[in-house]
Image: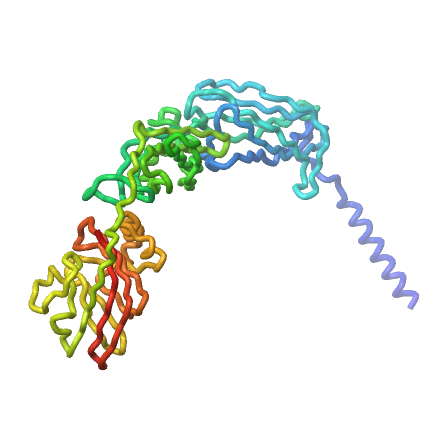
Length: 423
């Protein structure tokens, strides 16, 4: 046992001697000269709405935008943060602001942060501006980070190209009445572009449009806003049609519209007023005599009383030309009545209130305002009380019809009675 212990001890001493013979200093591959460069993690600019993003950032002279600088010191304490700018075509940067260093550590961002309110300088439209943030350490070391933008025009332009055109009347009639829709064609930011890759690009670089306000002045009354519509966010030239109804109570007066384009940031607006106002007349009333009519469907083909001429207010024989058949009973199957125009007359379902107050003007307006898919030649499932607005044979002629009775005498035979308001 003693012999074994002595052998182990000898082996351990031999290994220790070997290890001590191999020991040496760790090699040094570099020597630090001067202090370390400070860390500048990022420069984040927060533009306002309508300023574009990324490489298409555009700002306007005098606009104030916040810049957040995120940085950290290394072995040398920090001295200051310097904001510089270079405005095309100049090749030199100038100091905008110098801020002495003050600790402002953000746990969330794991860095010192500094927010600077940067005021956009003056310069030529589309000129490129480079903004540098420089962090200076006390040992003289510095670190830069930058972002670029182009100078843009903030104030939009508005031009009235044409109008007013009465959309409700079309080209078939003249005269305007309250409720008629008139159309103006406008161009916003004529000659404008929304991005530029160089200061030599053709066009004026504009901030993005926000909205279009429409004002109306009736006679000598005070002007009031009647519409506001959101615009596509672009600075490019934009041409659009603006449809507006003539205000209620404007009969016998001149209506003057004003169109105002707006930009949100910075807040800018420009307006244009058409050279002439819209002379508004009184609505055209229907005859005070309410006519009555009836359709009678008999047998399997309908017979001679199943069609009606809404221009003569009389039944049309089965053998008559289809061009005279404005209103027919086309089916009585399944205990349901179907009405159909066999010519170019078209129908729009409406309400009792519209029928009660019907004038030629109001019926035309209601019919024109209906979706194209609602202007049909066939109406299914007719019931008592149904109100039908009629446009006769593709012309500027309108009537209002209300179903007053439906009498079924057999599984096929039926009589439909109605009243008609017309000129």
